[in-house]
Each structure stands twice: as C-alpha cells, then as structure tokens.
Image 1 (spheres, rainbow, N blue to C red):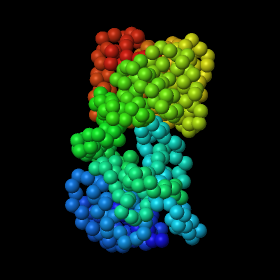
Image 2 (cartoon, rainbow, N blue to C red):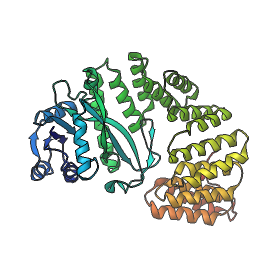
Image 3 (spheres, helix red, strand yellow):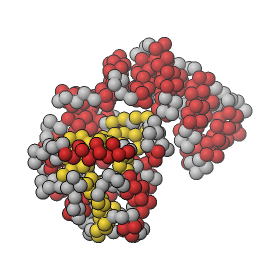
Image 4 (tube, rainbow, N blue to C red):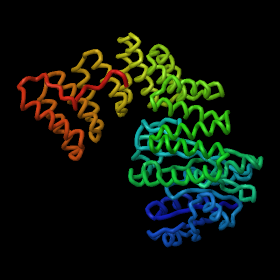
Amino acid sequence: MTVGLSMIVKNAAADLEACLASVAGWVDEMVVADTGSSDGTPELAERLGARVMRVRWEQDFAQARNRALQGLQTDWALSLDADERLDAGSGTAARRQWRAQLAGGFDAFQVTIRNYVPSLEARVWDRPAERNRGEFAEGRAYPGFIEHQNVRLFRRCQEIYFVGRVHESVGPRVQAAGLKLGTARGRIHHFGLVRPPAVQAAKNRYYRELGRKKVQEQPADPQAHFELGVVEFDNFGNYGEALRCFERTLRLQPGFVQAWFFAGAALARLGHPQEALAFLQQSQARGGESAALQELMADCAYNLALYKDAVKGYRAAAAGVTAVHAAILLSKRGLAELRAGDAANGLRHLHEAADAEPVSVDNLDRLATALVAQQDLPSAAGALRRRVESFPDQPQGYLRLAAVLMQLEQPRAAQDCLSDGLKSLPAEAQLQAAWRELQHAAGQSAGGGLKPAALAPIGVHE
C-alpha cells in the first residue's frame, strides 16, 4: 500500500517546510498544487522533494483539490493544508501500525484535527476549547485547542473526490457511494485559527464570498446554507443574516439538528430569548443533547428571569465537559443563584470559578458584577484588578475598575488605573475619553464621590 500527500497551496512558504517535514517517512510521494504563489512556494516545495503542479485558481477549493489528486500515483491519498502537521506517532512500530490500518478493509478514514485557538473561551461551532497541555511542541504557545474529525485519508478511486466550492470534503462522496469509513490513528495539528487577526479577517471575508457563490449554485443544498450561516454567525456577528440562512436550511431539511441549535443561538444574540428557546427545544426534541445546547437554554432562562431553571440548566450542562468549561458554567450558575436569592451559594460558586479558571475574563467579570450588586465594592475592585493584571490589553478592565474605584471615592486610584491603561493601550479611544472626563471632573470638584458617565459601573445582568 502506497500513500501520497496531496495539497493545494498559495503563498505558503512560511509553513510549508514544517508541514512536509511532518509527513517524512509516512508517505511515498508528495504532490503540491500551487494556485498562484508569489512568495517562492513552488520552488521551495521542489527543493523539499515535492512534485509541483501549477493549477489555475477558479474560486473553487474542491476543483483545485481534485486536480491535485490527479497528480498522485499512489494507492491512498492524505490531504493536508500547509498550516497543518501530521502527528501519527513516532518510531518504526507506529509507522507499521499506521500503514497496517490501510489493509483493514476500509475505503477512507476520519482523522482527528486539533485546531489551536488563542483563548480558552473560543468555540468552533458548538464545541468549547480544551486546555492545551503542550504535548505537541509547535502548539505549546497556545492556551487551548478544539478537536473535530474530517475525512483526510482515503483510497484513490473514482468514487472518492472532493465536493463543495468551499468547506470542501470527500466525506459526502464516501457516504453517497456506501464506502466503508474508519477512524485513523494519530491526528492533524491545525494552526489556521491562530493566525494574525488581519490574515484571519481576510480569510473570513473570502470564505463568505465563496459561501455565497455556493448557495447560489446549490440553492437546494441545506448544508450550503448552514455553512454560510455559521460563517455569518461566528466570523462576522451578523446574527440576522445567519438566522435567515439557518431558516432556509430548515425549510429544506427540517430534521437538521444543528440548524435548529444555531437558529436559536442567533435569536438569543439578537435579544429574543423566548423565541430562541423554542428553536432550542426543537433541536433537543430531535436528539440534540450537547452541553452547548443545555448551556444556551440556561442562558435564555436566565435572560427571561427564570433563575432557578437557569441554575438547573447550568448544572446539567457541566456534566462531562472539560475543566475549563466546567468553571465557566459554575460561574454562570453562581450568578443565576445570586439572582434567584441564594447569595451564599452564588458568591461561593463565583469565587470558586474565578479561582479555578483565572484566565477566563468572563469569570472575573461575572464575579465583579455580583460583588457590585452585593455592594461589596472593595472585593469587586479586587476582582477587577485581577482582570487587569491577567488581560492588560483589554480596555474594559481598566474602565470597569476605574468605575468601581470612583464609587469607593478613590479618584486618585481611578486616575492611576486609567493612566496604566493608557500606557498599555495609548491609542484606545474609550480610555482617552474616560481619562479626559475624569480629569475634567477632578478640576471641578475636590470631592471623591464623582462618577463620570464614561465610567458607569458594570451592571448586574450580564
């Protein structure tokens, strides 16, 4: 059994060497299809031992990947992107076992893909981040990751090819042809979600453009409408348009469980918790039982002032989630308990959550919110100082701490707080405006009870 690496690339010189090094010894051939690089990617690929094809880019990922597959001469294909690394184990025994799976009667294999993320509060679709323990050296710089599976290793045959202008996959073809699908050893490490914000933003815009073309070409495909809705929801915060995409999905396929979930999520973000609950209950009735669904239903209950229901929902959602997300749910539960009248347990759980996961800005914000509501302003200031120390690049921390310090009649400390913020973020307009307002107020009164509007305290209701 021979295996070949198949890739499409454009301006991937910064990543290509590490990607190809990760497959050394695991594949018999490497084919890199270049779609128009200007950074020397094709020449680098050739120096690294790959056979390079020039492929005309026609705004269709599936088409380009299928052209790359045509260049392979091996029995099996492994599909990677330049910002990915294969991690199938180490040593001769691991290589032997990896190859042996190809003779097991399967036609294709799903591979676990570990997507590194810049924050433990990140999500990919409805999946929360897990803490990164640093097993893979190149990924140690990132706090978390989110895993999913995709068909990346497959037998070369006429039935298996990529479909979809964007979010392309061979998975639908494997299923449609009734082929045998297994799960491969090892994983793929993906670094595309931790690229610089400008790079990620440009990619998001381009994927939205291709997604719109896809739904125009495939108007009866519910998956195409769903994918575009997720792009609008996750990458642009365009919840109204996302909702319309999910509703189109459901008209075409009423049993699409995730579309019910995301439609509910969009309604929740649009400020319609009652309508959101109706969609979420439809998702649940169709078998959607994820922790994310339970959490979102609890969020809706909280926003409808059904605090006891929210407490039950957060408690149920915490079963089986990662430690990171368990702390987030405990924090939300604490705030709901507080609003339900159980101040002792609420504050205890809020403190426990902030201590268990101090790198969660939301946990610290919820704790500070609760302490302000309880008129424990010194403790609220302490929680917000922790926030500023942990997240010095976020202006809201300085603004909220300054607001609480003003309520404590400590204008000098509030000025120092804003001054520190401006040292870290000198171009931040909100901090500049708050500083000017505080300076103006200080010049008009010697009293310590000033509370500029720009420094209004955080509210009880998140």
